[in-house]
Image (tube, rainbow, N blue to C red; front, side, top):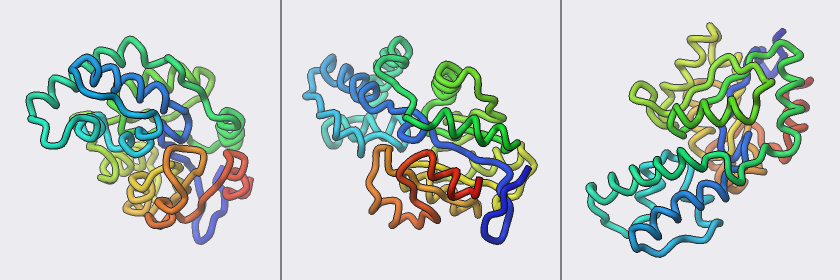
Length: 224
């Protein structure tokens, strides 16, 4: 089934992961703060990670560490963070209210579902498979050597190719500027969510086509 929307039809929806499907803020803050403490640096308040995260682990670590930290220090810190995260990725992580109902409803209408995250690919797959075991995602894609971080459109284009759909038949749902820029670069219908890590102003500035306050409103936007 396709959903009429504007000048095209929506046959698939790509979701961001952190801040869109899963509330991982406390978990991510704890992981990076663990590393900072271990290395003898001050930790940051949880709220600071709303801005720190979203652009991949390396960028987040660079933002956490003191300015002008060496490449050697950044790499060491990243190794420690991955080691800690591998053991703690499930801790204090929750599915946002209304997300599972939305996914089930989309799936029941025959809409293909996919995930595109700036989280490392291994961890993206782990999180999706663990927290959404009953949802049939057609594609789960995170950052790897072949798929650069958003807003590079390569990952979104790859998903479109694998789904055999043009960009204008895909909606892209996310909570950050990176998500909106990625969607718009691929001519996808960009939907910004306000329950995630960033503010409405950022989504407006990134030219989100629609901005929603709850998962249920995504159904309304897609005319379900």
